[in-house]
Image: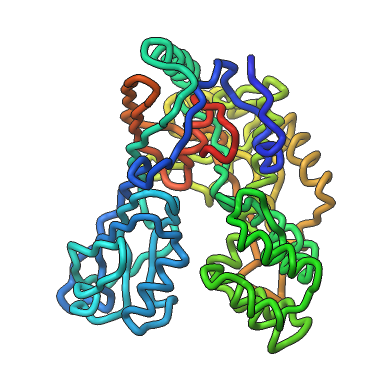
Amino acid sequence: MSFREAPADECGLGMEVFYTDTPGIGGKLKVQAEDFVVDEVSKVLPRSDNGKYVIATVTSTNWEMNRLVRQLSKALGISRTKIGFAGTKDKRAVTTQLLSFEAPLEAVQALNVHQVEVRDVFRSNKHLTIGDLVGNRFAIKVRDCNIKGEELQASVHSTQERLEALRGFPNFFGPQRFGSIRPITHLVGRSIVKGDMEGAVLWYVAQPDEEEDEQSREARKRLQEERDYAAALSYFPQKLTFERMVIGWLERHPEDYVGAIRVLPSNLQMMFVHAYQSYMFNRILSERIRRGLPLNEPLPGDVVLPADKDGLPDHDKHVPVTENNMDLVRKQVRDGRAFISGVLYGQDSVLAEGQMGEIERSVVGSEGLKLEDFKVPQIPDCNSRGSRRELVAGYKDLKTQCSDDVLDISFTLGKGCYATVLLREFMKSPLQDY
């Protein structure tokens, strides 16, 4: 099986290979927010005239999820914990999704926030939590490709053929899992898991990145050198809302790094540790590809996830592959009724056996981890039991159209799968262009 090594910056996120060895078309994503349109495929929520929750369809442009929730909660005068959502979307995009509110229906209908449209408002007895979706539909424009016209179409077709044979693409966690501009969330998570709370804070607030604007970069650099949190509030940009929350805490409570992390929204605290688990999963998947092991054919020792009633992987059920059940599992995988998985390492994780077990143990061992490291009593939101994730992400309704040096591409993915990871197989562009 041919594959291609990835550049160093992607290796830093665990995405060490491309599954396809076809030439990349290059190009850039999200030149404009309108180039990246995401429509959530939501689960149907029951309507109830006396329901406790208010459900609304919300379309936002250029909004990061935590900042959007914060702005909506301020506008409604409620805690941000009273707003629920099913999935985190891309920031530089036009995204449409369901949100739930514990707020008066009329107040939600009257919301007036810049580049946010609220419609189809109704009451329900059910609120939204992470994972309450089926998937997402994407309509994406890739601009400034390296090739044009028929050559562009031929290259796209060649890559698509390889992916059709796999019945999907490698299910890496995409760049935005780690921070679109400053990919450091997994490094924050690693520090938390290893008990280095000061290190976690410094990664989060004081690690500059060349892709950031100059004001933010210089602020982080200065804090890194001076470590003066009281002074930092005077020069840290207002737009770095969450960093300022951390710095403000440390101004009032010097050296309370645990408290500084806990001042952040719960889902952001969780994201740090999840990003670290995602980084290790990416390394595991990369190594399976590098060894030439199949992603869609089970091997002895693999662990598969059976399909649930929606045909999606059931992440709560883990079935070890043995010589005894191999024929049945192979048929189920081919029929899309079971999915080969890799570990998202946490306190309850059981690793695979066989060749996959070797890979999982090697990656976990290289990080120097123990199961109990993912029990973080000082920061309960950072506890993680662990899980498993399917190695291949399927896609539906993939359509492409090439015009000059622009590719228009649309498709539907299941929840938790990344459009940028599918697109990187076609583009093979520098990381900052996704």
